Amino acid sequence: MIEIGSELPERIFHINRALLKRYADASGDQNPIHQNEEFALSVGLPNVIAHGMLTMALVGKYVSDFAGGSAKVAEFGARFTKPVIVPKDVDVDLTVSASVAEITDSTITLNLSATSAGVKVLGMAKAVIYK
Amino acid sequence: MLNPDSVGSTFGGTEKIAVTQSEVDVFCAVIGETDTSIAPPTFTIRITLSQFEEILTRPEIGLDWTRLVHGDQKFQIFSPVRPGDQLSCSATIESYRVAAGNEIVSVRSDLERDGAVVVSAWSTLVVRA
Image (cartoon, rainbow over all chains, first blue to last red; front, side, top):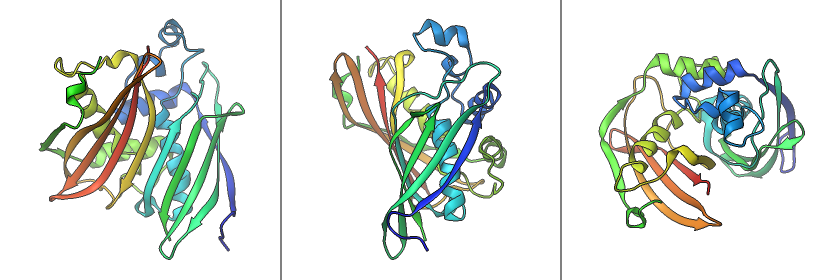
């Protein structure tokens, strides 16, 4: 039974450099900060970082799976608060969870949480899905 | 610096963009989505972000895309996008401010199919000082 305050099961996604390359090709965002360590360091980043929109796409998958498919997602938004840092040859965890914030006759609103290496990477992350 | 006179302007919306099965397949594969009959909720960023880049970096608007970070993103989906859709995309510069030397631009995209908006997407883009 889903009610306000219900916690959804946590899920862990894995992000590595190969996935960043695949997301760059899938999205068209070829910014070198997501692929080239030397470049990322040269612009003051700690290492290569994941596309914020890749993080959001994975959280979107979490939402779609709970909702029963992509077609049931009505609204989805987030603030990119901290980057997901992706060192070479490492699978980085992205831990996603959610709680139910609001229920109407036709929709459920989820407050979403996404962390990597213990750091909250999305802020104000929220989705509205159709029942 | 962004030309402040551009705030409130709407661009594009005439050219049709075809959503192909292969691009939906590739996007789905990255996130592990097996239902490729529908575009995942964030798929349309593929269309809107490149349109923002094209518009905002025009000489008369003047945004520096090389120092850009994505501040936030929101999608409102009125009807799911599917492979085979022919969409038009108009972009509106909704607001602009400078805070601590950072330029903060809010833009909205409206994706239409057959004259009806199917997705509205809001992006806040920050050009770091």
